[in-house]
Length: 442
Image (cartoon, rainbow, N blue to C red):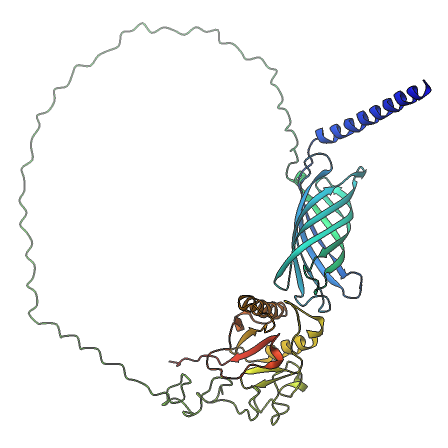
């Protein structure tokens, strides 16, 4: 009997707890939906667990609670790091998730978020997971500000490539639709007039006089106008002198251009030397002297008799270093190394050297990136992997201030190149240089 009473009492307590929980959830669901919030976020980011590579993140997010403090959120962000984290120098994310913002005070709310989406790094997209913890302080109705700690994890999708994980400490500013939906102040009621209108008591006087009708006026007879004949005006006779015939166009004379540099021989100061790489501004059709053929004029070449490469640092301009110009190809002392598509950290010294060389080239020189993937057995997969590696290098160079109009990717070297493939770049990217195309100046 005692056991039966215990079971009945336990069942009653469970039923009461269930009713209280259902009542709480019903109040939360029936609460008036809160306005949509647009959030702008900026903060300092660092990879996890190595907190030695500071970067920055910017984001825009939308929180749309459908009942009480729960609701979905959507956002996009960009995080840029130093070169030690990722060769792409920036990670772009698009995500969605759930947000819970319980009230801690009349003007303070806790912000808990969980997200999942897509992140793009080095031209490749990967799955993204993350979450955040923050506090929103309401300054005025519709405007909030507060700190937030966010963690994001970009899955590499391959066992040979490390995942990217980073944490961001940021400041979040929120703009709610309450700013636009504030009700205006009610207008002041007009003062009612208390003076009663005076009623007119004078009756209108009825008109008893008959109207006077005027006799009709006889219409005047209609006279038709007499037509007037106008004689046509005589034109002067046409001149008898014939127009002179138009002379036939003279055939275009062919101008000789022996060196094919776009400058005709009569105006070419150097008719047997093509001026396309380093044109001399003082002599039309001539090139600046360059004894070692490294695209650095002898006047500014620190090492004029040793083949090197252009460089942004003056002491290294024209001297051999990690890169040198071999005909129309840039030779790497240490070729670039890839984790399938993503550049490895070991390639960063060569990447920094490549950036300095390409930035020092003349602006008219074209740069062609040709990827290689000799170890891939499938021919179609080999071409795709080679193109992805070239695109990854192009993305890195564009992210580090190279001119977009100079860079291009291709499956083969530029036309006119007969050099043998470099064995050192069978799993890397070749960098080829193309002379600018010149036209005749008129």
